[in-house]
Image 1 (tube, rainbow, N blue to C red):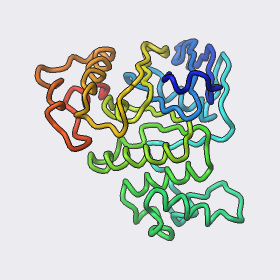
Image 2 (cartoon, helix red, strand yellow; image 1 turned 30 degrees about the horizontal axis):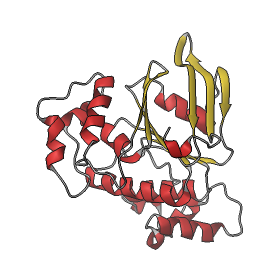
Image 3 (spheres, helix red, strand yellow; image 1 turned 180 degrees about the vertical axis):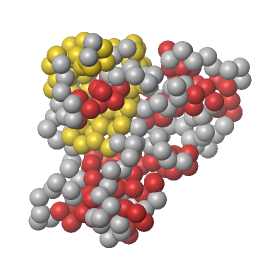
Image 4 (cartoon, rainbow, N blue to C red; image 1 turned 90 degrees about the vertical axis):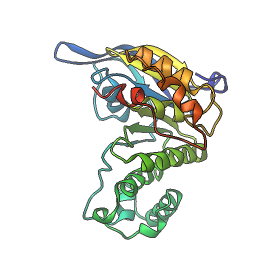
Length: 266
């Protein structure tokens, strides 16, 4: 946890959390604190427990043991936008909110994600990136203390994903929720997070603090050292020439080398 968070009371506290299916422990006595306003990314191979942990934090699944403390005000954004196709954009944003100023709050949230002009549109007319921005607006309109992101950019094309990275950082810095991001993308974790947690067999294998200045890009000094460390923890060897390739690029976020893209694909 970065120095600025050390004296904060945690927004999230997990103590000896256990989640199992049959005889298989997917989460095994896991301890984790997330400070208010901290951005944490979860990395790990498929089956390591990332999404299981996020679902427990979202209140979608029960845990089988341990103590879980999370704020009541929380929201989740998933890989699929999960919009109601028969409802207009602004009504999707306000699902579950009480009437009154709901429309005005939707307008404000959609303005923040650059979609005020799509207020009356139906989900079927939105692009993938627009639909995911509506899902973000739906989360933010609830003013969450904890924002849970379950691979929300995985299905987007590379350029849209870059725009979404910049948007989520802007929104995070404005609203200051604690954020937990589940991702299979090593570069994405480094670009966005204050702290990266690597899960293995339902336990925390390693925590890495990302001290790079913001805004970040793949060519930033120190970026490749963190990438190589993470890939090593994930059991992926960096091919010769890949580690230095990004240092030669500049001008913003660029496409990750092959090793980063392959890191967790299986």
